[in-house]
Length: 253
Length: 320
Image (cartoon, rainbow over all chains, first blue to last red; front, side, top):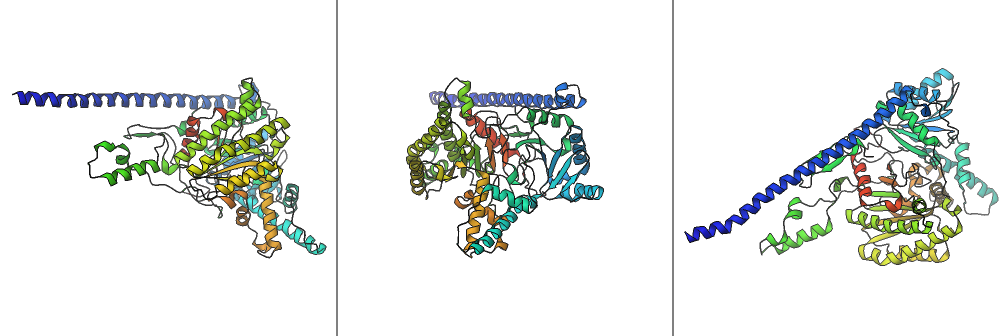
């Protein structure tokens, strides 16, 4: 009997400890999921707020998003995910919005050249200009793909080096090559791969990256991720342009 | 503001993960044939080895204990939203906002840069601890030479101090220091110190720490063209062999590290641009812009950036 009593006393504390640890675990787990719920709700509210604001801007009720002052926007670039670029109605709608906002110069880009194939061909047939650039009544649209980016720089390098070798053989003095940034820029222009440096680049797609947009042109470009092209709306576009118009760049100074 | 698509919290008991993000990241090889794999996965520690207390092991399992301890030491635990297999291999950071941080507090600009240095040490330590393979920081751009001389001189002295103070730690933990940028514009004492530090740490393999000083993305591309021209001049290659891959190989980052292309590029202080940093290399980098100024960038902000990276679906132009 004493032995049984002793065993019971020895075992009881671990059993009680085990029960209290289970209860504690459940309490902590509940708190964890409650915290998760709160964070999710806050995030959802922010998302809905953003959606609501974009919708209100689209209706034209907020005056500050009408008549945007885009004096510091000489060229706007748009990067579109190639898969989403297959739906050309979206891109055409985007261009019409930008035209209504009076954006004068647009560079469209997608990695695989889908836009060149679709919209580029439409422009070519309408205006009888090149596949890459089209002058419409109110704006210039340039359409680029990966081959105009890094490959363009490789071709510019080839041009620059061929010119250097020719000049070097004429001089016969074996000077070391000394290239400058302006020489690379001139080489890009000479081979037809120079274009304006966009002040603003809007990225439409799932990933927040510029997908190989011509790197030479991206030096001081503001980059804004707009989300999927499928869910684009005028409000988000107006908001991005408005925020850009308020920007001030120091250029490293 | 938290993005609805990137909220991702994991239960601390590893029982349940609630993922509200879109499809998980698929890390694929970018189209650029000269680009290396963006991430080499490390083996994850086993759940039992990380949870089982050493004292509960039977007496004859000292070998197991040593293995467990070595495993724990080799793979320290990550904060809960982060998954080891989804971490970026190369993180690049534009450390912006030191001056504004100092001005907001009524302090001199130098105080902002000092505070920024402390944050850099912390982020370097975290990157090392979490197994980031390469960390690149934009310390001083070619355009920054236009800043007031007092500030430029202070920054150059700070760089010397960073290298002198850090060399022992770098050697101890195995961090390799690499510098990119036009070092000819730097003071001779700093140039000499850079050579010493890079030479001393060249055999370290734990983490490649690239510091961009007097760096310009356009100049990087230009010097690549120049290097290729010298090779053509010496008959090593023909002009017709000049391709995108060849240009990429001659870039400063591509010549010094295994993972030259950042998977994730972070810029602090609310600015949304690259400012002439890694223009070529950042083609497929996930861009993370945060309003937090660099001296206020803490572990939580770094975790947020890495979590955001993990939740993105990155296809690099390929169909999945």
